Length: 391
Ligand code: SDX
Image 1 (cartoon, rainbow, N blue to C red):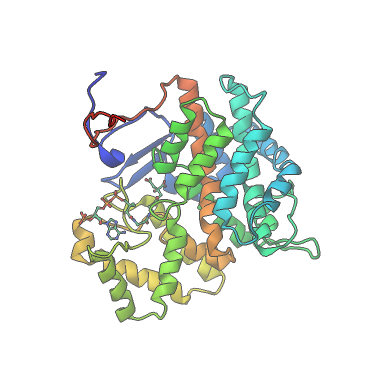
Image 2 (cartoon, rainbow, N blue to C red):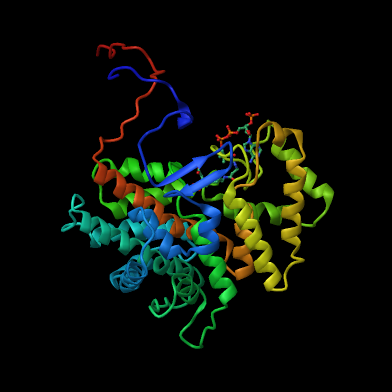
């Protein structure tokens, strides 16, 4: 009722919206997108098809798929003036900081004539975002390493094009490894949407004011960056680096550190607000990791061994069992990305790219469905009223 409210810090028990996009059963470890289980999608679908499914609610026919994929290809380039925006950043700026800025900057290009109450215009905004994110993400990396930006190639698939823009250069031909492209597509799919996580809730809250969708996505990117959320994939690799030598002693030291309540350290890539059972994405990610490293002749990778042993020790430890803490989607993703040659500071950027479809699908659902401005209440703990001292 108006005027009455419950206190729920961290939104543990508050549903802020209705949504028909994604379903999670945290007790059973189930994740469905529009009703389809994530493991089936990861095995048999592809990222572009999943984007269509999330946005429109149904799988596309062959014809609809081709049209959608073509439309995305048509929008991959970014305005040349965006290049000038990049040049204002320090050379060594974190790519997430750059991405946050440049995606927000897109609002300046698509604002004055954008009518978000029009379904078609919302659709074009979604297509623009899905298409331009890989271009912008790869530009963040190229800017960091001082190489020229690569224009997108529309004859390539979404994942191939991203790898080409990341690793290609104008001086020589870049041969795309199909194992890498397939692994990228799986990583994109596993990160595509996850109902009301912190970044999606941020996009919804920003969008509830009627703000420009490109600016709302930039807010989502900011929320994703933290190590408790999307920044965890980068933090997992930092943790594995820190563990260093693969030894029981080193691994146990990190487990003990994570259990120590005096120490703020958490086992990165472990735990989840909703899953109290295995994160189904983590299972697929682990399998993909094994496949990719096997195919690359890297099955003996020392960091993969450390990760597996770390997982095993944690899953047998009373502390983790009692609290139902399991590996999440990002425990193994970084090992795959590293094997592909992606620098660690780009891991969260790749999460942001993949999640853009989830963010914009939720934004679209909210705007289409009619909504009120998001406006949480608070429990005031400050001073009671007092008089300003007489002068
Ligand atoms: C993502 O929400 C989503 O859907 C997110 C996501 C998505 O797709 O959008 O799935 C993506 O963000 C994955 C999560 C990535 N983050 C990490 O891997 C960082 C490490 N994990 C944690 O910080 C933590 O588990 C969270 C942030 C993921 C969840 O936090 P909660 O729900 O607030 O859980 P909690 O902190 O209340 O934990 C409950 C207990 C606590 O102990 P007690 O106070 O009860 O003694 O478990 C402990 C926590 O201290 N705990 C951990 C731990 N995670 C929780 N202890 C050691 N290591 C950990 N990783």
